[in-house]
Image (cartoon, rainbow over all chains, first blue to last red; front, side, top):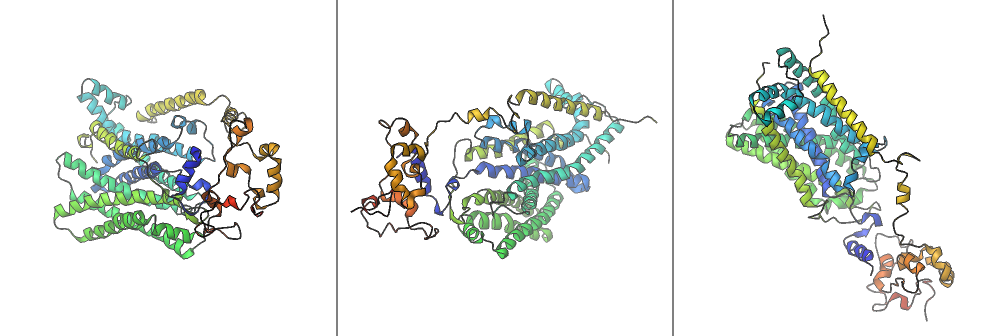
Length: 398
Length: 154
């Protein structure tokens, strides 16, 4: 038998029922799961930082810079899973130089650029400029020049100029909130607008993505804050944890409600795709949807967070609980991305069959690559925290 | 009172101006020469698309030599199925029929890939056979002529 026939027979053995030929292989693999996960972390971390800035939540101040730097580290890597998923990654830039207004991905390239250049970098720059000028004067050798270049040569640290740093930074934050919403709403939009796929096609998709992004970003900042405090041998401020925990609790409730509404609507409507989706969630997605996303990632953290709202004893227990909640929520949101991306490709448009997905380990589209793109931002964050330590910043009068 | 411009603004404007200029310069060199000639794509890609090796010849190429099969097929339910659906890609065979032989599937499983009993398919849409009950041990083509399935062999 000819080789490409053999390949067809091998994979046909893993499909069930009646599927169309183009549905045998999944086009979007694990890297497309990682991509919205990372983008969500960016948007979520930024929104938490904005809470402190715009709504003047003083108690969250220790996490402000951490959240911004976390957002930046993950944003720098956000496009990489997409690019390594391409068959021709060296052509990735073409989407930016010849964009078409009807291409959602092309326009997203500019949303991404806007968010990186205008929102995050500028906000961090305004926030750190004063400190960077001071650090440039304190250090010697190459680091002196690094900080000098980073200040773009604006060395004026008179009270009037520093005040403008804060004013302009505030304006950027206000612009940044809708930008963060658009950045992640867009990722949901890309799935929600695929009308051929009933598992994806819902106008709620951008909103669901947005809220799960906030949930994951807040959890990540919570974890990063705890880990940084541990390495710096600083006492973790329980008020900060409680405050982040409260936001996480409220956003998680909203997220859970929205996703629940989406499913209830789907179940009550019971459209022509309902039978196959029912089979999908009760078989191939059972573990990742009900156990991982629902129980581990939503119900357990929700109950625990509710419990922590009035349980105020045993500081060590509470800290441990927050840490575990952070991890569980991240697992839950990752599973949600998996259920959307992989789940949506497992059933056939014929509504009468399934294909199967086996994650590869090596290669540009494999698990190791995905793990690499998830670990790299942590390395970048460590570097940024070394270069721009929030705890060494020049204190400013309020 | 003189209008005050914070020193950050002109410097940032310069940085962004440089970035945008760099982008436009790079764009000038990176956009392929033939881009936009006919539409929002690289016109030279039309030539690229003629380059891949051709595998399928199309059934009209088959009928040049196999007129008899064309006549048989036309009379029965497989008339809409093109030759290469079962025989595989045939361009090489068309170019050099002496050396390159065409695939001739004979097994029960091959016929079963369309005709095996499948609850998800309408019986009125395609004829289905329970491969575990129907004349076990025999190949389909021992009785059926694949080009004319309902003209049973003696």
